[in-house]
View 1 (cartoon, rainbow, N blue to C red):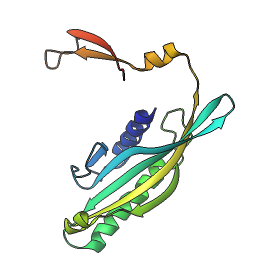
View 2: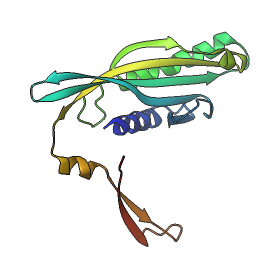
View 3: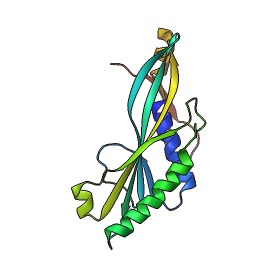
Amino acid sequence: MYSDIEKAVETRIEAKLDSVRDVKIQKGAKNNLLNPGVFVSVEEGAFESVGRGWKQKLDVYVEIEFENLRDEEKRRVGAFMILSAILQYLIGQNLGLKIDSLKPQKWQNVTGEEDYKASKTRFQIIFKTFFNIEAVSDEVVTGLLKVGLNYYLKPGDDVSDASDLTTLGG
């Protein structure tokens, strides 16, 4: 569910915000975006016991990067416009998933010294959501760890030439 949430937020921002040139799920260092750009990640969660299951509370982070070589005021104006649009596009959305609608928690300026020297401004928005987890059998959990792979040897060919089923293990 965690990566489904990241992908759904990424997809919604890409679909709604033409002014953003690059939207990515965060993987490693935050320095490979086209500008203006947005990173999306699920970074933190907490659990709450509910009946026979658990409520998984999550923090969904959306980080905006805006670059303008002229001056800081123009960077901030541009970043604020994108921040406002993202808030409007995500508030109250469940993104077609079995999650509670996204609720904004806070936003903050997270511009670092290197960003400032590179004429970049970064704002981070934190959204709250949750979904319910119920205990399942070991067989169901094992099924969740199976990954199906299809291999396509001819470019543009939609016919799988081979496939594998791999079970992730620890």
